[in-house]
Length: 243
Image 1: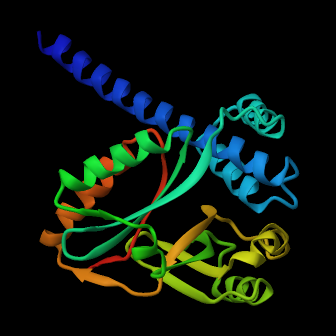
Image 2: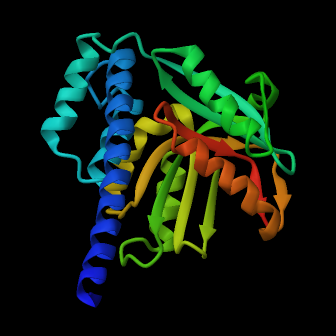
């Protein structure tokens, strides 16, 4: 019985991991399709598509799957999907901005509102929180990689006209924040200085932060987790700072 129980636990964990991976694949495929539809299939000039493809590669998505998603977007057969931003406030006054891809605004809006209403939040107009965020690029570097010395990263940051360089000791990472319009310069500069990256993405960075202690942050993180489970949700941004 003990052996059977151990196998059941392992099987359950694997099924859960596979389900999470499958959901992530679905979101990435839709983002690749939408990005190629709006900006074309050339990743050298479509920075949004390049970010989506790079992220898909990090999750070991097969190249054939990526190419099919790009082809689907360029052929404009996206089932009428559009990108929509929703906004609201979580408990503690934390601003939440949600990026969705949907072919049914009423359905998606209803699902997002339901999560806010049932987790202590306040679903509102996008403009009520959008002013807090600015679209920027972020590049993540592992601190423990031999090529990622301080001099190389500073030179990289200067090359792309970075706005800030942040050392995140908790995650053992260095974050370089840059203007959105300079995102296309990343690959050449990374190659030039032979840097090792974890990821690069376009993000919405808050200009105003709301500080919460660890206990208060649990409720907000729970609301964000519930939103992330929605099929139409692509990205979630908040201005919460845990102190």
